[in-house]
Amino acid sequence: MNIDYPFHFDQKGGAATAPTDKHIRDMIEQILFTNPGERVNHPDFGSGLMQLVFAPNTPEVAAALQFTTQASLQRWLGDLIQVQALQVTCRDSTLTIDIKYSVLLTNQSATAQFIRTV
Image 1 (cartoon, rainbow, N blue to C red):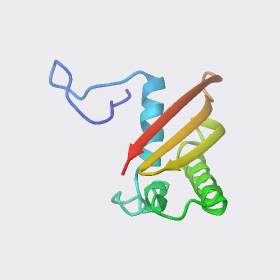
Image 2 (image 1 turned 135 degrees about the horizontal axis):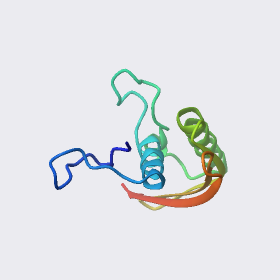
Image 3 (image 1 turned 60 degrees about the vertical axis):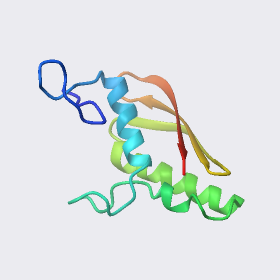
C-alpha cells in the first residue's frame, strides 16, 4: 500500500493511497524539499537543496547542488530508482529541478519536474 502525499483521507475515511509511479514521484519530492534535521529519527533525511537557494549562482554552487541532491536520492531511494539525469536551475526566486530516472522494479524510465518559488 502506497500512502498518498500529502497525507489526506479518501472517501471511506481511510488514508488515501497512490499508484506506485506517483508514490515514487512523491518520495522524490519529499527528499528534494526536506532540509536535513527536519525529520524526527532521520536527521540525515533530505537534500538541503532549499538551504542553497540564496547562495551565489555560480558553476561551483550548481555542481554542489547537483552532487548533494543526487547523493540524497541515491541514499534514500537507491533501492527503487536509478537517477539518469538531474538538473537544478535557480533563476531569480524560482528553483527548478528536472530529473530523469528509471524505476528498478519495472525498468521503465520517467521524468519529473519540480518548481518552487521562494
